[in-house]
Length: 213
Image (cartoon, rainbow, N blue to C red):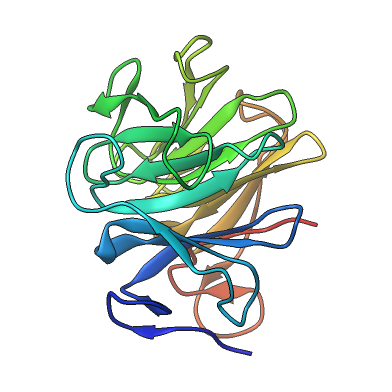
């Protein structure tokens, strides 16, 4: 089953990247080059709702990439171009809150691609351009910690894209290294990789998203 076509109107998307399905089955999409997020009730497109336009103010996006909806139905979006995380209460944009800025230091993000919120409310972000994963306790940045450096060895990434946390383990799509990584925590303990470049069994070609059941 497919949904959508290229464009900027109803039931149209322009280079969509992030996707999330909430507990009610509603589908959220980061419609990246339309500078908006989209929500539909199901794969038929019923309940089509959008939020956003190009810009850097409230209810505006600069290349939204990853999207996540937490247990309280708050929506998190990462903006690749600005290096920020946005959180809002719902598709009206109420409660619009931002965190971060472009850079490589504390509370700074460069090329954020995906976002994940665990059951304790901690926020994980993959940073393609910084070749690391960042984690913070909440949208204030408290508990800021990063992990990773550039490379193709242990504890290294080459443009990490997807990030997902399941059963206490962190899964990362290490896109430029054509592999997926699993680790126990933000120290890198239990570092395990799978995959290599190619089109055969156990091989990837620039993988991006990940989901763990």
